[in-house]
Length: 331
Image (tube, rainbow, N blue to C red; front, top):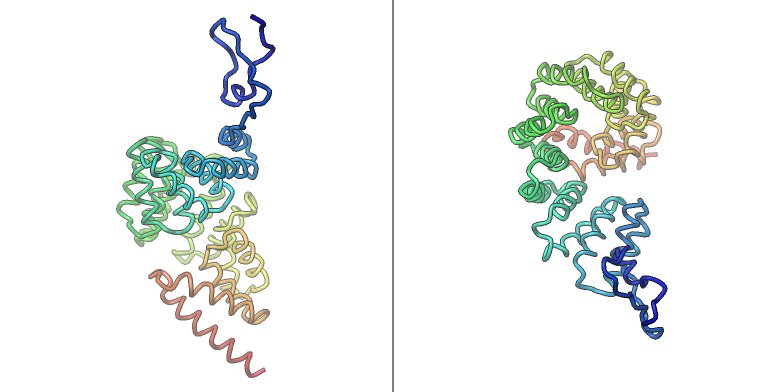
């Protein structure tokens, strides 16, 4: 029997790299078209960081096999990593007929929900993911942040402390704890929590933690010290939106509108969903660009109307926007 020259293309795509038997691998007949495995292609593209190519491959897989739920799940994950959370939700949800008890499907669906500020849905999926992998740090920390976002502070604290039982040196859990303590009007405890973690934090994480320290100092009325802390964090990490926002607020309060606008504009560009930054940016440009200020006030009101933390600011934004509109009509 004549020995053939190679392993077939189809077997290569299936991941076969060696043959354990002495039998000859027969090449396919010349009239047989070998179909590429688009899911495998997509997986490799995703592994290599080629997200656009991965999306194309998974989309082709679905076009050929509309019931390929693996392709739907993987496409959703890649779409989320590409920044398209709404499309990620649609695709991962379709995969749940097969992947309801899969960690990745639940975790990344939760991440997509959280990106869209659907925190109740996110919490449900994080908890399902944690039933599958109880000590997963990513899911635990994201769950803690989701509890924090919906003001379920007791659960935020207990979940953050659960992170520390798994990873004692984790530097994000203390930030969650400190932010929660600040919300509970316990700034002294928050500052103590952050001071402890700063003693052992790495240089990469230090600027963010310093920005939270700045928020605590602001809450205590220590504006000069807070501004210095924010600016130190910005110097180390120029794209740190939280520090830019904090510094912008203090500069605006000190009457430095031009400098405040620069910081606040950068914060809003980096974090478009930081809606309270939009309010303060509108305040900083009321005189220089009233039309844009009205638009920022409108966006803030639309997205913060039901947030009890911003009741006073929403009322103020409505008043200021009406005054700017009336003034524009008179001119």
